[in-house]
Length: 365
Image (tube, rainbow, N blue to C red; front, side):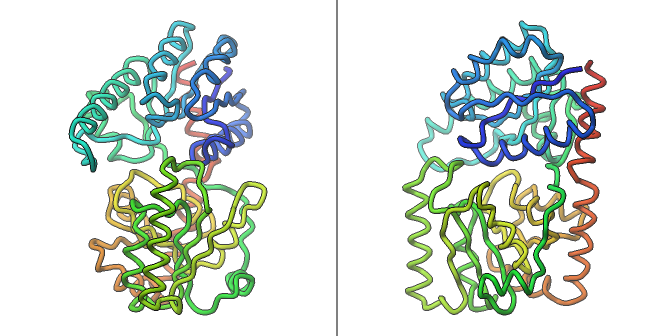
């Protein structure tokens, strides 16, 4: 059995490429013959030129997100058709599943056309895929109820948790970053959908220290001007309201060559994810890898995790964050949350995820 895993290159995309790199590594440890075929995000020709390599494989495993190939996802139709004609079994991991009920801000015509594209692309995935992988139950419900996917064709596998992270002792990490007291971390793409401004409004009530860490530029985020404006407006809000005593911005390049993010996660007492929308989070998996409890919004992904694991507390409204954060930081609650982080990391490690993928591949081969 030989598997070709199709994913974007690391230099053109960070989230799914990172997921794929870790998955390939874990699959090889399970003695699965897997090769990763990468392409440049937004450049379908960089993938189509490698089609001939698929003939040597038994299974094609596609890491999917709607517009990774650009052109509104239309090149995916051609790729799925070619893979089908070659005769391979096809596994698709859908990292995002968008509901037809999703509300989009902007031109109604564009919203209508966008939903038509999602509907068309999901039908293509259903037609050509032998197995669909999603990361959460609510994804499966959307695919089955709104798009007519057979439920027995869909398997739920969470994102794997990175192993072997060298966690720096919290006091040491705080000392390196020149921080004292509790540290509440917001890290990653600092964009409106991730809700950092919500936390800033409650900064005085929450207390020290809101630590906001982001790159000055982000590969995954296309609207860089809007992102820069949002960051600038939040920094201005902190300055205008004299919140620098409670809030600190660390805006500097972080990359694979300089993975400083583990220092920030190690220093954090809580990771805050006040997302206004979205369907999952790589930041959450990093928090679990470093055994850092999370306080998050009530989007379906976080709600689903919170029902099974005590590693996360959910704020039902924007005004609830100070109260929920203080509740999480109570000694007994906090120790329980750390134990639940450990349980989540153990049950969803890349080793465990790879074993489940092995079973899926074996049923198709």
